[in-house]
Length: 277
Ligand code: COA
Image 1 (spheres, protein in one colour):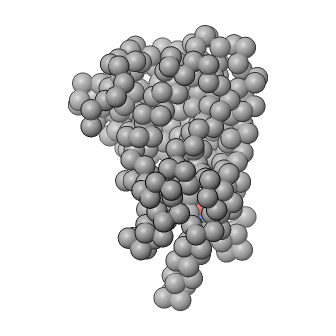
Image 2 (tube, protein in one colour):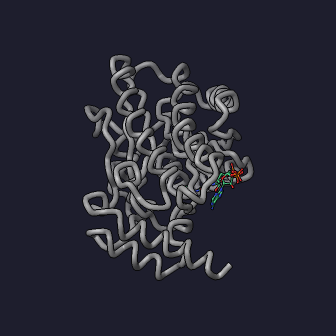
């Protein structure tokens, strides 16, 4: 697809992106590299991080893969140090790593709930906190990947709803604490996005799940990974320089509708799973 932005918007900048081995964050990493950024790709699975970086380098971009589980502040700090040795101070940080599974609260263990809170919410804090002292002093841009669940209480998603609501408030709070230092902090909140692990989990019964999901979206389709990457690029570019502390929905209007259809679809699929088991 033809790029809708002027070329080289991020020329020479260092973008540090967690969860960029696949899905939305990988496309964001590719798009930033296409615009001249040096991209540090951070993930739990080093093979995936290195592979995603190699894909970027193969198309003429600048990238390197690093290993860290966002639940570990120490591991992230080591990745930040290594990334800054490679590409210098960080201009842009995307906290993209996330975890999800479909389960009703009563069927989830305390550890299951905690795991998603730790990856999504604590992981976002750890990411931003670990890059903080290594940001370029003026004009650094932080962006978290939230989700429609932050504002849409959804059955079988209690862990994700709680975690992403926390992510939204974290971003808004950091925008107040760090704004005077020239650090902007925003989030994007996607609904369903094609070709992602998250959507494989949220459409457990394939096409029939998709049909029920899309029926609850005013634009009656999912976003492409490219559309989400375009929004991320806008939010870390000079074009959005006065936008701070905002959570931008990219959901085809889904968050203006009720979440019962989506929640019912997820619960139905869990019940059918159980009945078949
Ligand atoms: N239903 C109920 N509980 C579940 C579950 C499910 N489908 N999947 C995992 N859990 C529980 C586990 O049972 C475990 O709890 P327990 O120790 O009390 O049994 C807990 O969650 C942690 O699971 P574990 O597999 O040990 O964690 P992990 O750190 O290896 O993986 C997940 C984290 C569970 C989020 C895993 O799905 C993951 O790695 N996801 C990353 C990719 C992803 O989710 N992408 C989509 C992003 S939107």
